[in-house]
Structure formats: structure tokens, C-alpha cells
Length: 293
Image (cartoon, rainbow, N blue to C red):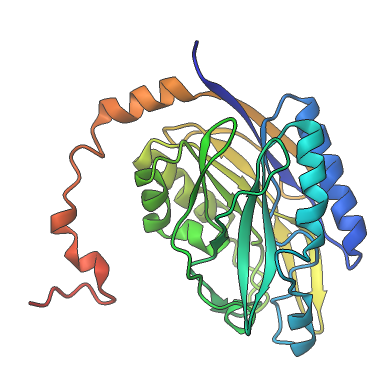
């Protein structure tokens, strides 16, 4: 019997009311599940507005331990009720440092023991994440869930081909990217949406592995700055073609069904993993591309 999986991307705006954000996220998960979705992606840091526009010490208090995080606790119950898998992104307090972290809740509500902490941390106008997050120390992670073996990166990770390659090499059958990206506060004329999508489509194509991306929508203001998050959440097939996408403003869900056995056959047939030459990739382990003896 062929193995198939139904995936969903969600998209929503976020307010200052954490409970309202959790309720909205739950309604989208329920909507996706009603359409048959088995693995459902919520966007990056959906409990709050995107707090990284400015460097403010009070926002450091938004971090919680995994054990105390309300989103994880809440969605463990939802996952068990609906029999769905949920990657959950949250702001993690771990000792004296803080991380942008994903955990995976399986379809019985159990929490997988391994977590992923965001590897690549951006720092630019409106996206001052290095103030809030330490670079992740977990390495790239995959999870064997009830419905598929999945890998998850977080937002800025999606721009680095090494992320998707590492997850595919570990056997990820689908790659998920919870995201928060939009306009550039210092220059509203810049629009990265198409570049952003094409970059991730290329990751899917190069690894012959479908990708699911969830981004937020809405205008979020911080003092004299503001970001208009451009949504455009999408799902690709294993060749990088978009199976569907949401628009720049709508809140909602996007659902797609994929044949995992067919994807695996195509992946093996192309030979892109068979023909890799890791012994020739030494320069990838350097910052400047120099190969030193």
C-alpha cells in the first residue's frame, strides 16, 4: 500500500494578546485537520507579534522554558484530539541564554525528546534577532512522526542550502520552514517575496524533497518602525513546483497531499545523493572558501 501524507501550511496575523493568538492558531489547525491534513505547520513565534524589530530588554521576558511554554502545552492536547503532527516554534529560555526553538508534537500528543534551535541568526534593520537569540547548539534535526520523517528549519535557515541538504541527508521526507518575513523598515520599496519563494523552491528541487512554508501576515509597528508581513505561504512538490500558495494578506490554510513512495523513487532515480562527493567539499567548512593544508 502506497504511503501518502497530507500536509498543511497556515497563515495568520498576531496581536499583543497571547491567548487570542493561541485561539486563532488552534482554529486554523482545526480547519486544516477538517480538510484531512495530518502534519500542520504554524508560523514562526506565533504566540506574539514579531518582537525583534527593535532591541528592547523587556521583550527578553517573553522567553519561557519548554516546560512552561503555553503554546506547547496547549497544542499537545489539540494534537492528541485531532491526531495530527504539529511542529511548534517558541522563544526558549535555557539557563542564561535564549533560543528560537522548534519542538515536534506527534499525533498522540507526545512530545519528541529532541528539539531544534535555529542555526542562522539574522541581524539587520527591523530583524535584530542576534539581540534576542543565541545561535542554535543542536545541529539540524529530523523527527520520525506517525505520518512521515520530517525536518524543520526556522526562517533565516531557509536561505542557506546547507539546511535543506543536511535535513535531506538525514532522511527527511518533507522539510518545514516556520517563518516571519516581510517588508524592510528602512526601505519599504524593497520586496523580497519572489526571491524568498524561489530560494526555497530551489532547495526542494535540489534535494527532490517537498517543502512547506508558513509565514505571517499583517502590519506590526514598533515605535517609528513597521513591517508588513507578506504571507505568501506555500507548499512545493519534490521538484520545487508550487502546489499552491496563500496570498499576501489572507489568513487561512493551504492543504496538499503527497505520495511519499513516489517521492522516494524519484529522489533515488536522480542519483543526486549517490553522486555526491563530500571529500571535495572541504571549502564548505570554511568562512571564506579557502582550502588550507
